[in-house]
Length: 170
Image 1 (spheres, rainbow, N blue to C red):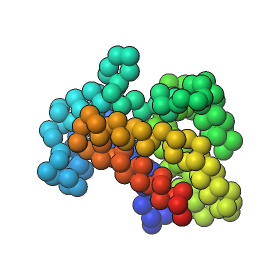
Image 2 (cartoon, rainbow, N blue to C red):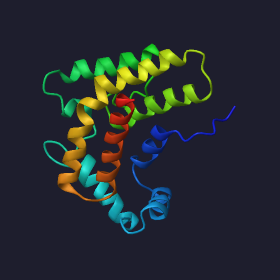
Image 3 (tube, one colour):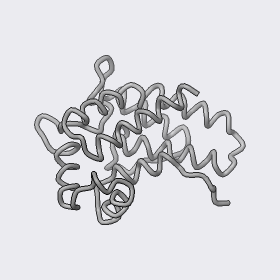
Image 4 (cartoon, rainbow, N blue to C red):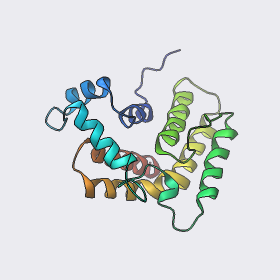
């Protein structure tokens, strides 16, 4: 059974991965006035999310934003969420990285879309994960990205922040 609904988290996962020709083409279709050439898009991505000392301008790690919890505690709690659903991470994936977190949310959405019998449990897990994790750091990451750029990546983080708020409000 193939769901006929858009998996918003999978879309965010694609859009925030390191840009290639597919990203360039899709961004051009959606935002022709805001999409720079591919090399500039890659430079923006690296400059915003990956390069910098002591950290990038806008790190995509939840632990970089935590003021009242240790990085180890945050990483462990993320891992436990994933393991609770029988998921295993690639050893190179940071459990508190935004791409890992939204991949987990995309998986939950997929389970809901294909009619998993434990709909209430999945929705509870989604809400709890958003409350305990993304809601605590995405607003700050979004503000940070907007402070450093007015490009596509700032827009994407703003949209993720809005989606988290929408789900928690409903």
